[in-house]
Image 1: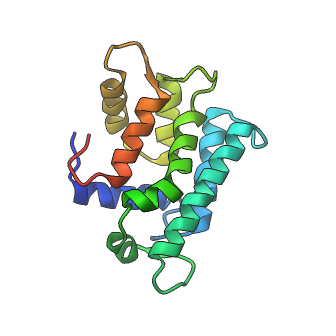
Image 2 (image 1 turned 180 degrees about the vertical axis):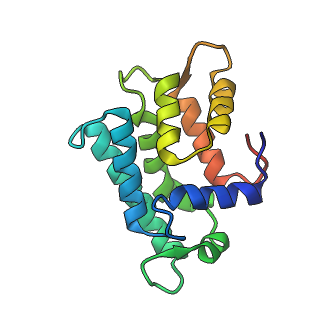
Length: 167
């Protein structure tokens, strides 16, 4: 199941709009971090939870500064569509988010994400199960039942910054 850049743009917006309000706000990023930690069983005070919360805050701060054109504290789909996750922006605001998301589900800190944890992360984020299973299988490549955090981080960067079709 491939997604065009336009489909991926809509999907990103809908996934980031965790509370379903139709606009992105800081609350969406806070809710995402807490939901992921709850699904994965990561305690709220754990370093991984704090890193994820900080990565989400940084992403939101950069997104709001760049895309909230009317400065109302939220990013509408029209504002998001006009915004670009270019490499410079992403290096400053997206990298901490990608690092945190790609490592929070590495519960034993071995650089690998087990299938159940990967599926849990994506379930918490609202990804369709069929997409998540296909993505895991493609990233797993060798059928080991695990994907590397580095490989997943590479995928996430492409998901947010790539203009081409992507799984």
